Image 1 (cartoon, rainbow, N blue to C red):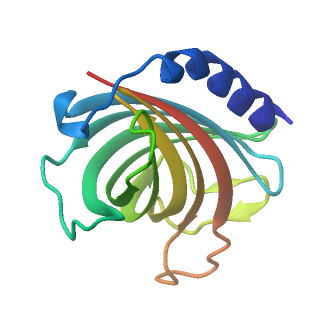
Image 2: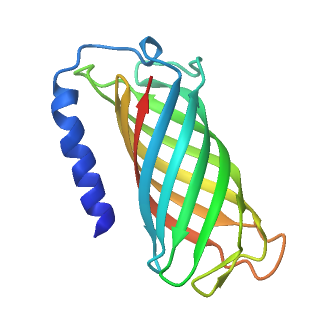
Length: 180
């Protein structure tokens, strides 16, 4: 419920801003950004996330439909389950495919990436992740307008079977980012 409320607030906060924008290309705005996110795992672990973003200044596979581009994200993550908390720092390269939209004021995209995360504890809510170093997998989508970005992602953290047990954790997270 919290994640739905968070996404609704993000949508309402940006909808008037989005409606007032002119045509743009992502290159017109800064390549650096900050992000805030909230999500929850299937077993009700709350996830809070704050990140720094570095957009790559390149377009690949450009066509009439859109183009591919990428960014790097360095983030701080806090996982809270009520009885245990975990802090993590993660670094991920992320690839996006940005679709050209007919109205040219907002651009939908899909994204995917695999990064690494370093946790201060590898147990939470009876889950044993077996390692303080995990892989961070993500897939999602969002909408970007000039310097504001709103997204919804599925994220998975695990040690990729390098050590047992490997309970892993699956998260659905909404994120609001601002580029400057």
